[in-house]
Each structure stands twice: as C-alpha cells, then as structure tokens.
Image 1: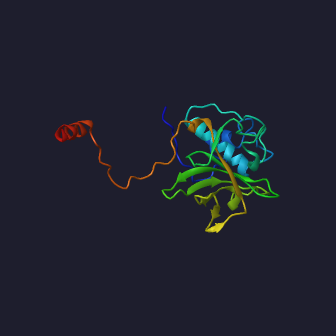
Image 2: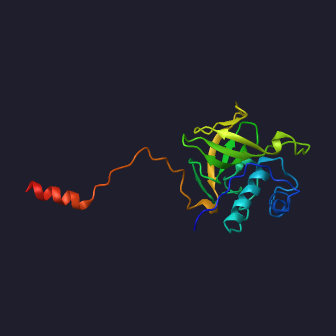
Image 3: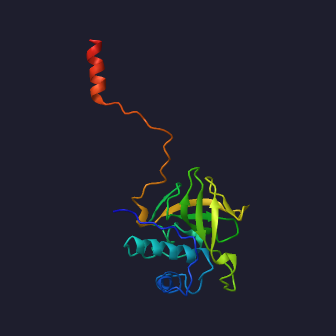
Length: 197
C-alpha cells in the first residue's frame, strides 16, 4: 500500500469543520480540552490522526498521553511504535530538556543535506491563535537541533523519532543520484571470458 503524505504548513483552526475532531474534540484528541492547543502534544497527536485518516487507519492512543518528552516511553503514547534516528515524513520527533516537559513535533519535509522541517505548537496560556506558539515551523539540523526564525529554540536534547503505523513500510529520504552507474551485463562478462581462453 502506498504511503499518502501531504505536508502541513498552516495551522489547524476550530473554525474548520474537517479539523475540529482531530484537534478540538475528545476522545479523538485526548489532550483536549485540558492541554489543548497551543501545546506540542495536542498538535502532534492531531497531526498523527490526520495522517492516519489520509492512510485509512483508525489510530488510538496506546498508553497514557503524557508530556512530549515522555512520548515513546513505557506506558506513554507511541510506546508500541517503531523508533529510530532517521527522520521520515510524518514521523514524530521527540526531544527532552532538563527541568521541562520536553517537546514533540511532526516531520513535514526532509532536505538533501539531512536537515528537516517540522510543524509544531508550543505551550502558551491564555489561548491566543495569533500567538506564534499556536502553530509554527522549525528547521532542524541533521544533528536534530531545533531552529525557529534563525535562532536555536530551547536547549532540547534529541531523544528519538517515533514512526506511527502509517509509515512502518515507508522508505527514508532517497538520496539524489550524482551520476549514472554503468550496469555490467552477465553476457558481456561471458564474452570477455571466452576471448581470454
């Protein structure tokens, strides 16, 4: 089955009927209303659900929801998902930070140099859809350091990529070929061997 992916580079809003159930309703988004947007976990879970819908999967939260930095741990969201160190489109990137709840975001684009782009939301109260925390795009280096508006964002330490079920069989980024590789056909080798005799 082909993996369907459409990058999200704009914020979800509760005025959009198709997005309400993903980000602004319980039980589809277990973070609503206690930890609703703007919040990294509420956003990331809604985005995972959106990509699940796109791939005809009915996803449920496996384990307790928890802070972003806990995602993928035993008893927390994503505990049964595959984990790795390679960014994939639609994967959830997880970071920890000393003394904080950590952060999670969704990979939307992978660049040829190994860097990648994530869609995010960040904790902010009172709720204000015009505040940058509500939805923002970050650039991440291939060493998984987060940059927002050209500056390093927080002192987050990369933990893992979580691969939800819709990308289990999805290949990683494909390197751009630098040139054509010549193929040696068996019959050419056979003729050469005959001539040597």
